[in-house]
Image 1 (tube, rainbow, N blue to C red):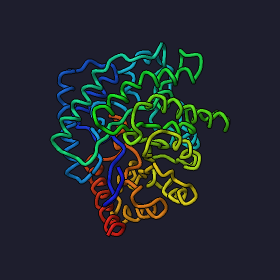
Image 2 (cartoon, rainbow, N blue to C red):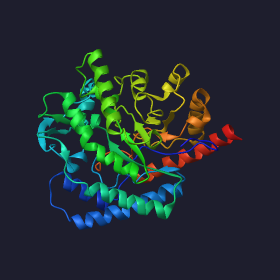
Image 3 (cartoon, helix red, strand yellow):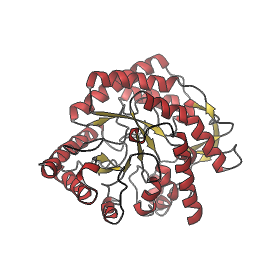
Length: 375
């Protein structure tokens, strides 16, 4: 979608989950028995409510809020075979390690491992996601829709390989296994957002020991596999999300947009979402004054920060939008969010009510910018 009459608004996908649903998702992730029927009922109700609330807030291109998922990437464990091993604690990001006192209060991760051949285990959760979102969209009638899905690259960065002879063979197996999910979402009539944080944040954690050549080869391979997995989906149905890690931390070791965006431009996706509001990356709007955006691409820069409870002033949002519009054109900017508001069911950095207030500020800021850019 292009902003032909006004600046459109969207976000990255995950939104705050109701407390009772969140409790069940966390318990399931921890291996505890839960009432699955009750969980399904809560997901259906939560999707209906979150879609209606997005429309009521004024968001143009809405998602299901990732209500059914514990985490935007780790949900793959439930849907694919071969991802049930363990590999110990996840390596911390370099920027966090640079500050030991901060590192002591930052949560740790346990890493899942690929311990067998990757294949589709079940399509029932995906079918339920599509069914719930379809019903909610038919009732709320938003202007546009999307469902998120993990890229092969981000799954590989969070679920380490203990089975395949090489990273490439593991990645290609993930691509083939995820292809049916990608195609089913697009076939249902929704936009498909592929989450690819590995293209940026991976350099700071999982792939921190790569040489520069190895890193760029890894980025290129991730895009090649993604393009193969989405080959049957029209580019206009595809959007890609980049980020440097959705956490409040130093981020002083984040690689620049210059080292990420050209790789993302090789993807088949017609739109690319990326961080543009937080203190580490807001300045990178200037990148587009020296980078020629391909004619068939649209950008979705973040206009509000997803890691702070500060509510952005709508005028600030409008100014951010106008900067990007000034370098790539008003029709090629969709106002987004840096990252999700609940990338994990355990996420509690942003107060849920504040998250919705920030989205309302996004809508108001887009309206201010639209008045100045289109009238």
